[in-house]
Length: 205
Image (tube, rainbow, N blue to C red; front, side, top):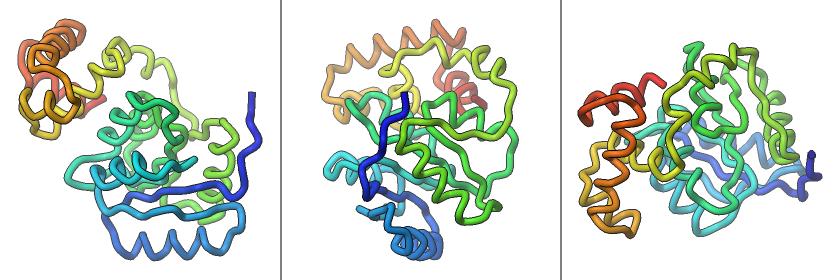
């Protein structure tokens, strides 16, 4: 059921381009439906700020640096009451909208669209709806990543960013053996035998 959004809708941004920050800040400030809470320049800064200051909707790029939109989506999936995420990107690859949905995003908007489309999408997402271009959803359900738990997806995302098991354990506040257990399980579910194979599958999905 759709929920009426509170007004103003609290929005957080994540994009590597300073010009995009300025453009989106101006766009949101001109519309009384929204309040811009923060603007982050990378994925880890976005996650830190979102953890400190609750927002309703996050608007993120797909390639942010040093990681990507998948990293943000996978880490938010393990958070209680996470913000809903709109991926706003110039990446025109047909696979990206499906990847956004697979990793738990609420909407996909191309930067080739008019600005009003982004604003209306943010408002729609804040009401609890999803907004995506047409796609064959059968490919999403056939994705092996759909078999992973939220924690396994989070660990896999960390592996893809180059973190070691010890670093992941420290960041997540769990034991090294727990991380090894998750890695073993996700290898088995994905049918792979190495980190490189798991990461390759993750980046393609």
